[in-house]
Length: 503
Image 1 (cartoon, rainbow, N blue to C red):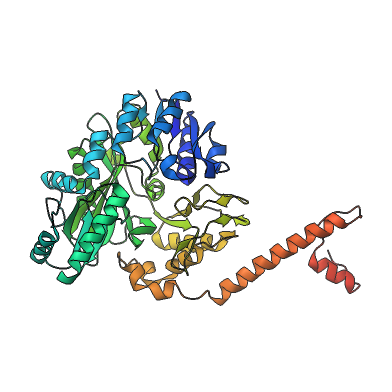
Image 2 (image 1 turned 90 degrees about the vertical axis):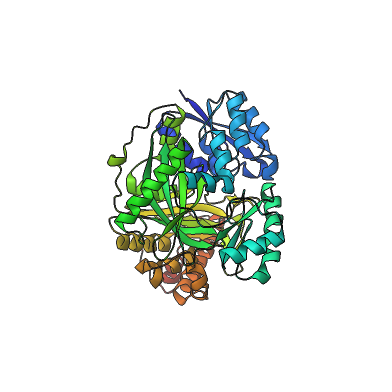
């Protein structure tokens, strides 16, 4: 029985996992780098251990340091979250060797699905549709040119061990093949330590739709329906929603069956995701399997009412999956926006710094998965995402209206964020109609990056004015000798000067 869990991660996902553990009566252990001493996940955990300097390679990616802490803290299990070591088969195997439960799938499953070429072969054998492409790694530029001409342009060149958009190049004609081949191999080698690449036919006007799956160690597997993840910039998701406005009930059912078939083909254990590309004619193809919890998992939790982290822990405890496919229903609609500390008007460069003011929205159907607070300094060393804003409502229209409202309420000062960028997405006609695909950002770049509107300017001026007023009040209160030390209002001061006082 798992009684203590070490979370081998940081930020919002570490806090989110700890919350479920606390509800289950499970103690938590945090690990942190020098840059994360003041992070919320460190303060929230029951125990916390320093594991190294800010650079991830020497802290959050150090398998032996994390294993050492887990043994010192006498943790029964390790939850990897997402990113970092979450899809590292060597890490999962080391946990097993040390008698520590890895809250995730078996190392062999991670290994097989981490190799995109092997994953394609496995899915094809299981009867899951795959995108036309190569079955073996490319050996040379000449072979790449020959196969591109055979498959037909456009073609997507991909790193076999890739993820997150790294090692991917879109090729429109023969003249682009050589440069794309060399760049993809180089990027793949630097990011994943492997330069193997392969080709897939590029699906035009595609939708990126994924199905959440759950499996146990006793041969059971179910899906928890779909998420629409087509709003992406450089292959990085920005907004996700569930259910997808593009799928028909019949297609949703068929894709769900394929997702379960894919999970059973690899004896999947725990929470995972089957990602599909769906073309404009609603033909779908297997893209990849993510053998971990996804960033966007909250939208699924909101519409099906299942805590995925708790299910992961129960499966890791070797419990039989208590959920049945016929019991899972989609209820209402959920939307997630990723809140990032980045300068959207300056090529989305990260914007680390100290949060001066933070006003988080609230109300019915609002959820915030975050790790920041007023006075917290966002470090420069990690992903710029500082939190996720999730709303739920009975219909998609109501969910959009709710997201507009909470984005209006969300205030962060002291650094640049993408809040205004997200507001514009929520008002975009294509998004509102649900008529968008993975080309949405490219198609709407100008309108999404337009200069800040007058209302936003007035709002920013008001916030700056209020903050200046707050600082002046602090100074005046520090110098006053009066008994009444309440802050002096600018309006009250003006009234005193005019001989009129209204409070």
